[in-house]
Length: 168
Image 1: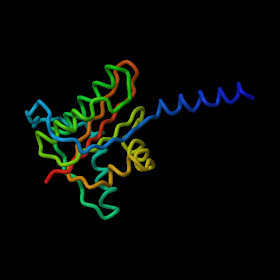
Image 2 (image 1 turned 120 degrees about the horizontal axis):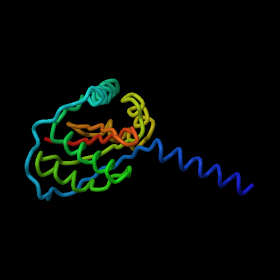
Image 3 (image 1 turned 180 degrees about the vertical axis):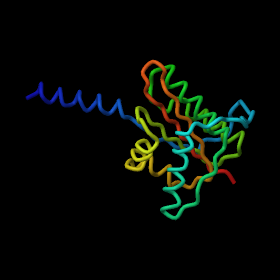
């Protein structure tokens, strides 16, 4: 009995880590050291589709669509590369990203969703919408957002970082 329970717990752990996504939000003070705004960012089709799916959902529930900001997508991309380089799925450094967005863009609040190992924008957005914490960011009191989706060249797994900000 204990062996079967242990096997079942191991299976759930593996499944959770293989299809993980997470959410975080902060109202930290804006004291980041870098004040340079990144104005250029080239979006992939998957990134544009993910942003559209999020805005379509927001509109469907009576909310305003969010505006895309390249600087936020750049900060998202930096985090994707961090996760790939360190082989982790985490919100490590979120306070630094949030503080930078607050300082550089004047954001009042910042939230973040991450996801790992989803093969399409639709499956990632569906997972976020089926998670109360992630959905809270998607329907939250934000005005702007950005996203980056990067693939680990070694494993082929995709990393998603979606950052939301309230500016104004």
